[in-house]
Image (tube, rainbow, N blue to C red; front, top):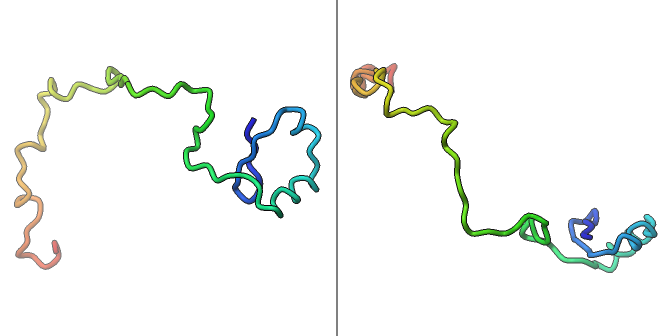
Length: 88
């Protein structure tokens, strides 16, 4: 198992070693700068590392079929008047 020390480094322990470890052991491991910094938080994870990802967009509303797109007809010039100093 992986155990992260309070200094952020990770050590690899068996369950027996973890259960027998005391606070003094943890302090000792930190004092000798034992362990490694893990860049990938999923290192050693049980989650399978796959390159193929499938996304399900079926829960999103279908915008193409909506006929109530009132914002498509409004130009930005109608929204912001750049000649008026309060709109800048």
